[in-house]
Length: 273
Image (cartoon, helix red, strand yellow):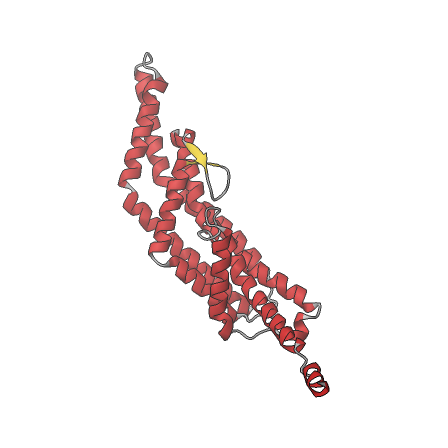
């Protein structure tokens, strides 16, 4: 019995467990970037998407890119540098998703301004993506943009861009995050500009309606302004929404294309930075 015991003791089965733990750590490091992007992205980062779905997609996408990435060595994983790598991967994914969300928030801002100026702000409900009360017009605009985004495979382009970022910026290389700050400021400015362009036709129509109502009430002071002006404004804005569906769809499609191009430029800028 002695030779058998000696042979089993020299087998060192703990080495296999240590290798498995190393692979799990490397897989976890590779999953941080794409997982953070899915959590903060406009479509999959919404509250109506269960957390289990986002985790499952993160694991599946990490399995796809696992064979194309260079794993971090064990020496780096057990050193203080691993903390900076973890935070840099999370910041890259979160920043990319949040910048894309800022671009998508342009339609929410435009819908809120249209609803506030036309009297439709009374029709508000709880937005599942933000958790607060949002006008129905904003939610319709946002859902319209999500439909265009998914129908043109924009979500696949965004995920493919994040997967390509592993080739542009391998795991373990800490980039300069100045590009995220400048891209966030630029995205906020573009959000306000795009919202102004989207709501400009509605604002012009509402201005003409208000001027017409003012002329009518000036010529006939006995008429009640609120009983006449409010229904005319609602009917006018409904007609504008109906006849501007095609032009609004083109504007939202151009906005999604611009947001994806901006995301690709950010990922390319990380390598050059």
